[in-house]
Amino acid sequence: MSDLTAPWLTGSIAIPLAAAAVSRLPGTQRHARAIAVMACAASLLLSLETVRELAAAGWATMSEPWVPALFSANALNAVTMALFAALALVTLISAPRRDIGGRQVSTVLTLTAGALAAYGAGNLIVFLGGWTASLLPVLLTIRDKAARRRATLELAASAVFLAVAAILLTLGVSGGYPFAFLVLAAVLRAGLFPFHRVAIQRFEDGPLLPAGLLMNAYLGVFLIVRFAVPLFPAEARTALPWLSALALFTAIYTAVLGIVERKPRRLLALIFLSQSSAIFAGLVTARPEGTTGGLVQWIVLGVASTVMISICRSIEARIDEPLAGERLLGLAAQMPRLAVFFAVSAFALVGLPGTLGFPGEDLLIHGVLSAHPLLGIIVPAAIALNAYSAYRLFSRLFLGAPVAAWAEAPDALPRERWAFSACLAILVWGGLMPSQVVAMRSTAADLLAALTATAATHGTTGGKH
Image 1: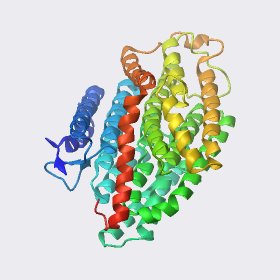
Image 2: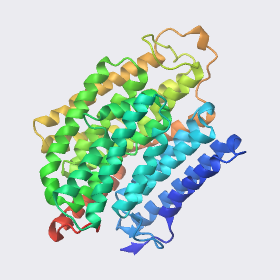
Image 3: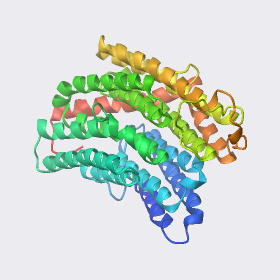
Image 4: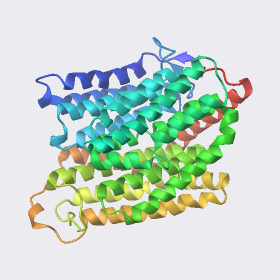
């Protein structure tokens, strides 16, 4: 295993963490957004440099030169780290001014640092630290006390399960027990049925932007593909079909719930949960096309959902009231740019031809159908229902007669236009030239297959990966 030329991974994690501490200092409130944007931009640049070095080395796994046991980079996590840093950057740039106080910025930056640490972790102990660091700031921002208690209980349980698995592996225990704890932690974090309500409550009762960023980390499924499957291939071969079936049921169940949901925030959560559950199902099929499709859709869902969540939060701030009730808001007349950004992102999410979502959904559906010839039909059914829900949400926000009281509400601001245009450029470029993105993600899919084969040949050895 070769080394990176510099500790890029450590830097990409440490910079947003340091900026989170600086943003809470007295006198820095006025410059909180600038501090956070510069930190996330620096983290993104370091992550992209890691991707460049990996690509130049043929995507062979590379470790940090100073702390090789703590962090490493490969085809799976390097692109994911760059993607998440970019999503955090877009979230901070497009956030309304009222959401950019020291506490809110610190929440986003701490979440970002925790997720990046989990992605780059070389062992389960470091992964546990990133897992926990990404959870705590969001849980503390949920306003409703009962909802906060439920979310804290379920998500803290996931951290406990992960800690137990790490301890068992450190003690040399192998077999079903540590694998079971890893799966339990992943199911809780991913929001698979019956734990989907926690994610919905985060969207409904807490700050929308951190809730969306936390969901876009997908650390539950990352735990499965990064640690559980390579460490326990025998147990995985038995459990993965059941996990895939549970994810498929969650995808269709939340899609059906979305049909009757009236609250925009809850509807957003249900659409994203359904789509992320389909990605989960694809990644655990152990089929090359399913894994590649899941990894491509990971990019699509992250980019499209970030734009949709940011626009919904911007609309709330502009009209100065929560998005609730049954009426059509009719905002397309005074916010045509936001309407276009939202529409393209929403329909890329569900596989609009000409966007990256189209090849991603095609690969995902083929992979799931090859693994589950009967249950696999759930994926296209769930996608169709989510497309209908996305159209309903677009209609609620932008169609209908304009409301006179909101006539002065501004359209997309320059910083929003730049951020959302970059996101749409990724979605459209990937749709017009998908071979480059698919090839890059198929490399990660091949890595997952190789890790599993290596572990199956040599056996599982207490936490060595």
